[in-house]
Image (tube, rainbow, N blue to C red):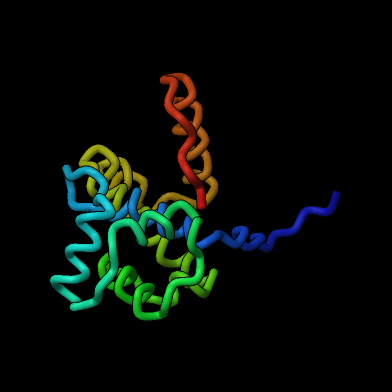
Length: 147
């Protein structure tokens, strides 16, 4: 088996998977995940775009997968991501990387670890990542998405 130094691109995700990622990830500190109803109401109030909570649910569950550009733009705006997040896998990867960092920095303990790790080599950071994976397993925590 040949090994390549180039990273393979992340597999393409469905619209439902991308929306679920945003719902799980984008939230105010200490707040639970937004509900479909909250998102629909905020979009109607702040963007004057009509979208129902049930339609958002259909999109999130993959029962609908061809929304209008207006609805995708409204959802992107609500979650603070560019509309291209839904169409361009490179943009999606960049946005999800940024969101992962924001989520990590919300946690003071993680922030402290990140500050201490600043300036370490890639090899050292990989080692720290492996240690964290092992500790999560020892504590019975599920593995984290590494997308």
